[in-house]
Image (cartoon, rainbow, N blue to C red; front, side):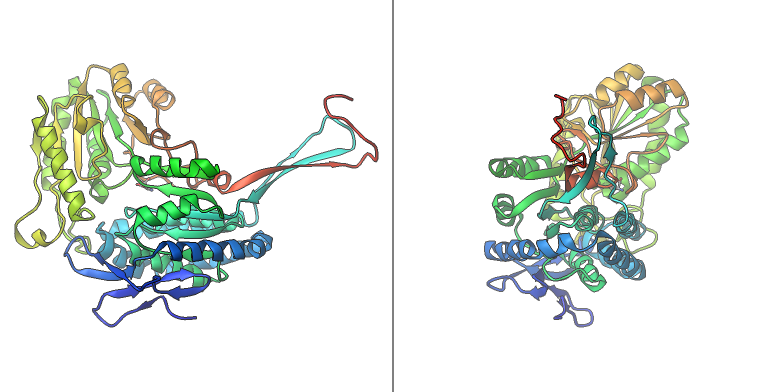
Amino acid sequence: MSQPMSQKKNQPEIIRNFIGGKWLPADGGKTFPSYNPATGEVVGHAPVSTVRDVEKAVEAAHAAFPAWRQTPAPKRGEILFKAAEILVTRKEELARLLTQEMGKVLAEARGDIQEAIDMAYYMAAEGRRSFGQTVPSELANKFMMTVRSPLGVAACITPWNFPVAIPSWKVFPALILGNTVVLKPASDTPVVAAKFVEILVEAGVPAGVLNFLTGPGGALGKTLCTHPKVALVSFTGSTDVGKGINAMCAPSLKRISMEMGGKNAILVMADADLDLAVDGIVWSAFGTSGQRCTAASRIIVERGIYPALTSKLLARTRKLRLGNGLDPKTEVGPVINRSQLQKIHEYVQIGQKEDRAKLLCGGQIEAKGPLAKGCFYQPTLFGDVRPEMRIAQEEIFGPVTALIPVRDFDEAIRVANGTRYGLSMSIFSKDVNKAFRAMRDLESGLVYVNAGTIGAEVQVPFGGMKETGNGHRDAGQSSLDTFSEWKSLFVDFSGRLQRAQID
Ligand code: UN1
């Protein structure tokens, strides 16, 4: 098989699409560069795919479906198990590339790869499970059971912030259940996504079962969403793009699974362990430079402890070290690109203009010294934010968080629920009654007690309520529901006509 990349030492990689078992340039041969957000250097060049490339990829996936769906699931599981083992062996190399292409600090890049390893082992084991049910019949000598059935071609459209973990959440359950896949990664992180595909190919995924193409999201996404041979679209990204996907898929009634924006909140009650809360806030607000769907961008604090919490948090935030994610001393890496950097800065300006919000620290693009070449934004804290302000309502996706003082627990819950999103929330409190009320009343797909808003594990469902999602979930057993249809089977062994509801 031809190789996915050509690489000379210290030169950017040239990656290719993977269609029908072959590594191919785009139709027309154009490429686009992928940059290191810490240095501005080119990490690689990826194909500018066209509608023709998408059509070829969908056709290849469609042609491979009948044989793949009939491959015994434990055999499919063996391939995923092998992929997990290759990911383990190549973890360090992939993590370094991920940091170079996406920017997150190396420890977190290792976590990104680890999440894919976890998902590979978890889904590989589903090859010997994927349980259905047997259910008693109301009639004698009649047997009923349910089995999962694959849908066909799954289009997986994935973001840059978890460029290996999120493809793994979609591709592994799709494959284990017998679907074939067209994977379209974000244009900021095509190189590391190509490595992920290379590993699955090495593990033995047959030609046509997994196809991969890079290029402009708008045109390629439209073709995937409207192609009659695509059965389902699984998307992670912004709510605005998700709404467009929803509309494009509606006429053909494609299944769509979407995980979109968040405006995640940490609630800090007066009885909380403040040092623990500060640890959770710093990790959740500034980890991955705030570029997680689960990042905490609102800190809702009972007034009694507001001054104490603010001063502890401010002291910690001021000390955070910005830098290249490959430097072990770095705590906060760059943001993904210049346009994101500008967008974050615009939000900070909006925050400053809005009545009474106080910029407590940060609020600047790092424009001096060696970091000026990259996309660095200072970790930023706003104080005295009111819940209806734009910086407390809209997703910023950067290292910016807003402290919102509230009177009591009830107001904290109301404020937390007062946005259009509902992905991840957490409460710091030693009061078990408050913890349980928060678990019940927060409108959020993920709720943490005495921990921050980030760090979900692959064996539980991941996704959100309200405009964060559309009812589906990635990861956990629920991802099996996303990537399969339930079939109910009835076997009558009575030898005569039996009528349900009538006899
Ligand atoms: C995301 O930001 O889209 O729970 C994914 C977490 C990670 C995954 C985040 N395990 O923060």
